[in-house]
Length: 88
Image (cartoon, rainbow, N blue to C red):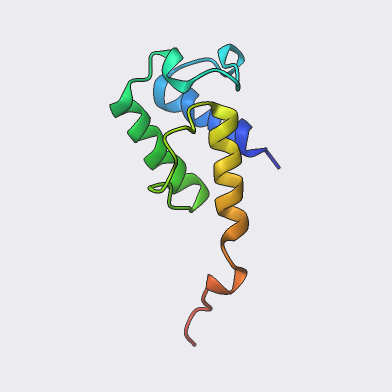
């Protein structure tokens, strides 16, 4: 299974055509030519990919590693009981 960081790198590759090998997880996402509008697009794509709401993301989360950690915390906080069974 891919890590959240690996999946974010894959999202950036498909969304912005940036080679994941060029991404330093400790640098600001904005340093890769991703402006605030594109960052919003990335966050929406990440919400879809990971099934979490990122609207409460702290503005201090600016690096890939920080975003991956935030997503992991959000995923861990989602109780398994929120998945509903299909009606019979």
